[in-house]
Length: 606
Image 1 (cartoon, helix red, strand yellow):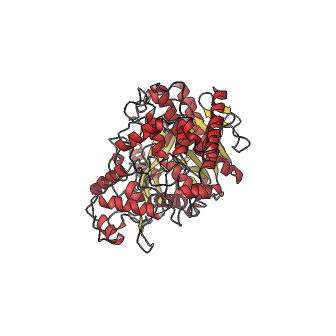
Image 2 (cartoon, rainbow, N blue to C red):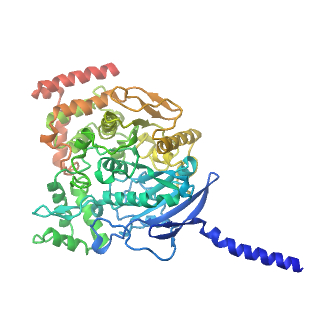
Image 3 (cartoon, one colour):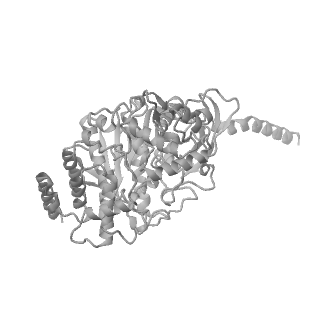
């Protein structure tokens, strides 16, 4: 009995000694103090999660509309980091495929104290030096959060560290103004600078989570991908990442930034006019002080009303600091930070703009194409808009609603997504930076988020990158097939290979893109290399249209476009455009020749 008692005492003593060690397995020391995460077993592998880790001082009170600053002082107690934090203030979109937040999670809540990041890692050994994937969520710089996508499966399958971040959105992230003397009163590009600060946090701290601060992939979707391209050309972000994974967006997409302060100042005046700070005698500084005192709800209301008067009014701007010049110009000059790139779109990315229009399932009348072209290319000459409409009109089926819908989607996909991919990839290749181009064409057939008739739409590829067909959060409503699982494995290998070796790891001969080798990866099951990336679309948008427009004079790329698509006057004007024939292009003999050439090219392809 004495022996048994001694054994029990020894066991209790050992348990006492070991329990703190076991409890502290998930504790990591950052430069501001200790944080405790949690463990999860994903497909047989332990993944450590640290959720809601602050990377900046809360941007509230006097810090509203100010550039974020790092955490100023250390915390004394171990900080619990076991759940996502609130999203940055936003007005959620009704489209089901946009919203990927668990409504029962804290990330469903909104709070201006939102500058947090999340880390999912298979190791906490600094000696492991695992590649890091730094994810920037999409959402038009208006909506979204770091909890939209969960990185456990990607981390477990590719042995990488996955970091996702919140950053300020809408007016809180992209409202800016200068006074009459040219002094910046509200810092420009606050949301992008939030991302930059998070990147520096990763550089300074990720080794404690098993990551390699010298081997970071900056990745994102849609506005997140566009943001990543800004970092690729910003001198402020140089050295903070080695590779980039761009899904469904580049900064060459039309009208995503301003080059003139007059446009941003006009947005500021528009926004202010929707608030109680609309005093004509206020200086910009007085307006700022007034706006800092308003409630978050008042700001969101004003933001919504301003967005009704202008398309995506809150955008980045060329500020001479983060964006030293027009991004399109910098790209054409090859002013890149050294980087290896994977870049691509889905087969029907452009449907993100049309699938939410009432009647999408039944199809569209032909006039909608005119409205779309007028809306996106308002500042182009009439003849050029007519040429675009002609290029995307199927005259053999002018009254076929489904065909008209398909042509609208094709126009939006090629103009806004796929042609810019070609342009950016070629510019990268000219400077010796390998770019691997893809088109994702795997449709999620059993999805609760996407309309079955929308094709492989914007964002459909992201669950595959995150391994959801293999393992996904319980609240996710998609069901996946064996084909989906194989495609997901390949999508993870692609970004995992980029992270490890600077190039994708797939079982086909996927070569870097260039003007002489426009091969690309067609992502479906099985994978297939295709030659000559979309020759008609890329020629039309990257050669024909630019040759007809002097961008520096027309200012077509960054014009301030009023949202008047629903305006009766515009409807009337667009009906007129719809009935314009090719003969009306006689205004310019060169345009007539182009139309004849395009007709001939179409007939050949048909």
